Image (cartoon, rainbow, N blue to C red; front, side):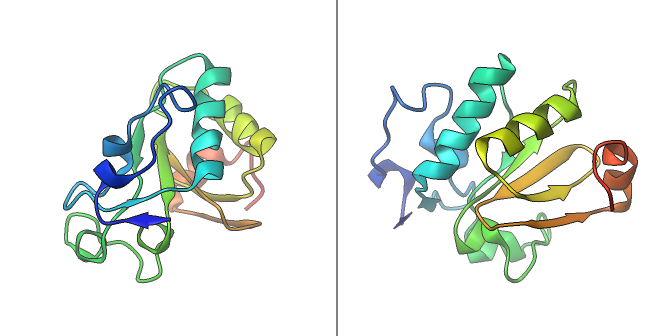
Length: 140
């Protein structure tokens, strides 16, 4: 469900104790998309990784997505609903990918320093740098 501002969202601190709505909202305007399945997924990753999880990008308003800073796709899931770009810096990519798959994510964007997940089914893509990082784990 979409909210004009993250402060309006029905946040359950006991369900998602390692995240805050503000960090998953658009940094430009605070727009927020509440998807419990997606939130449960990143909490699952955090709990089972037993390390902090850095979300580089989650919700983006249309303006922010199109900005020169982001240059997001026209039909980006970051603006259509919600998607998470999860940093893999100083983390084991194999473990992260395994846990995301175990939870039920099946759409992945593979990048050099992060992995993109969203709620769509069975899609994947990669950048050139992503192929270098993920080549032993994913057939491209």
